[in-house]
Length: 419
Figure 1 (cartoon, rainbow, N blue to C red):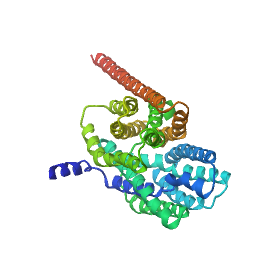
Figure 2 (cartoon, rainbow, N blue to C red):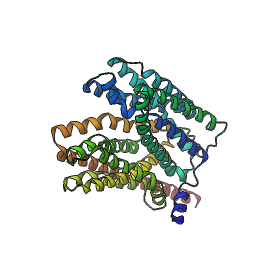
Figure 3 (spheres, helix red, strand yellow):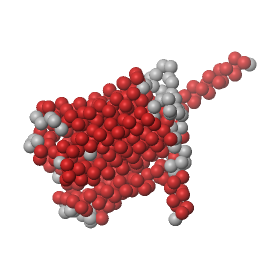
Figure 4 (cartoon, helix red, strand yellow):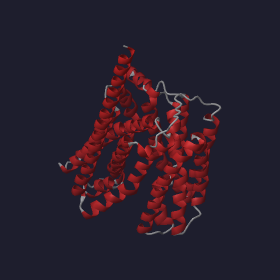
């Protein structure tokens, strides 16, 4: 048992102090976004909005996320990741507090759009900071640590949010969200100030390549948006499936979803550490993760046995644990050849787009086509994602062979000249 614990602890070794601080800031920030899980309840119960109104507000939420991610990338390339993270966190805190004073439909649409626009400028800046504070060989594990912080934050947030609603009402959520964002800003200023930090992988590109002209990266982004659409079904359509088809109680659904977070917390870092030491390339691992996630849906149509839900959740969880860290690391590596903020903004936007369309698409399909047909279609989307990742792998291999051949030809020509 002691050996097992030592091996687990060792998977966290080698990460820089700055990465640990960044993980803590992310944890504080994500635990603070406790308004989000209760937003639809607040809008329907407290503000008496209709379900249609809530749908439009959530669209404004997603649109703000897209614009914010794009703007965050632009600002990161112009003024640097530190300033963007500081301005984003403190402004988000102020806007969260102000959001509680909006009561009309139009005002709330504009308000939530602005909150997400400002909040999600943080994401590309955080990714670039993560790249700067990580040694090249530790980037995937650094990403995994940030993912653990995000998962812990999202797990703690709703629980704390429920207590706040019970004791202080919904209004208390906005105050606590705002205060935690400001607290995260204070931590950031005191521990990650450029005068105090150590950059381990500084990237300076004389002629940066635009991410929009990087064909391989565009293919990768489309694949990730499709993966996002598939993955997000576990947080919108799947709970309804658990309840309506398998008659699970809210507690059983909570335990099943909670299993996902627990497995990630315990196994993701050791799994990533082990996979990093194998000969598998990032594209191969992303492909495998997408296959596992797709399988988690198709198996649901094979049997009515309730245990298949646990197997499906396990497949999705391991698919997620493999696909997300290595896709993030792939984006960070690719960003070295161009404007880092622009690259990481587009990576964040791919998942923001999945949020805009994924939930709506899944819910519409189960209403019109039923669950079985929906799972077939979701599996087909996963298959398309797998195909694009396979194509990406072949494309990069072909490009690498072409470069090697060009270098060999150049060497041969130089040898002839010397002779």
